[in-house]
Image (cartoon, rainbow, N blue to C red):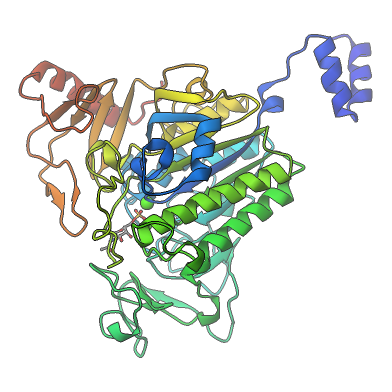
Length: 515
Ligand code: NG6
Ligand code: CA
């Protein structure tokens, strides 16, 4: 570029609009990074494909999710990478299938952080592009290195893997410690009442659900009989930190107000917010204003509450005049479960509601219900409303965001993340050709075909009644003619089974699936 031009350009750099106008006049296209939007990823917990009006739910009003669907792109083949929370979140943030790494199963609340600080993550990719990054809500990827002292500095955690700010719960609503952590500290902790956490032994003198059922207002159906917090028994034991303990009925409001405050603080910069809702995971204790909003009991009411959280974030974006250039992606970490361990009427009141929609199985399952989840993308400035049948997985966000922000990923990072940006923006009808689905063992979807590798595990997860898809023989389904996976074609099409088995084996042994 001639030096005269460069110095002119520098001179006007203080006037961004002028620069954009000048660039336009000169026919210079803005780079991807300059055009890229704010991103809000709303990640529900255990929300099923069939739990959302836009996906066919009739008995749960979800007007805000439906509006996102109506004004955005609604995916019919959007997947979480696994059928439970920790491995799905691991894949979402690292772009690596969790089954490659031992130790990425459902974590206890006192587990160490499972993402190594310094690794490329979804958050570092945004940060690299100059975004301000925040996480609010459920974390469940571990905290600290080992033997964490909850009364001191809680690290490493979100701040060491790419987030500028965090306001989280460590694990799940049903696991101790039942406190919020802002950045590296427990919120509202009284130093005179320190917290202790154990997943091995009860603390002498502390009540437990097992021994003190009279203290409970929500009783376990399986497990969940240890520490009693807010009248609900949990997984794991905790002592102390009484002033810091959360109130389950306020949790959605607390997280949403933190999410909105993050948006307000970030309005003048580009930002990425990972807003990980707790609903409708157990224990389902919605705020009183949502109680009775459905005839499905607390599970349905918790979904209405989740929908309201989405509405509040959308309202905030509108109020801050950020709606147009913010890409909102709403999805869920795994499929639905009805009885996940508390006697909360979910089974009794289910009636004809089908939480997984047309799919078989649910949370914990390799049938489609385990991982085929609601998946919505709304970005008014760029994405035209519609429905997409492209296959996309949450593991693809790392590579797709790199593309969105004009970056090239290093060869050795995010080994399973594919750039499906054209599909996410509705510019291409196809995303991936194949995706690996995970719940203990693996399954492979390739186009219309679904191969489920043999497993000796139980066919049904007894306490939850989730059909797990475990069987000693291979399974092959044609999702186009048999979306409910009822007609196993494996015996009739052995060549296809062999091809898919080899393809899955290749993905497994090569350590990566990104070209
Ligand atoms: C299971 C819990 C279940 C839920 C799940 C994790 C029992 C009996 N069941 O072990 O209630 O917490 O773990 O869910 O304890 S997830 O969505 O975070 O993966
Ligand atoms: Ca979950």
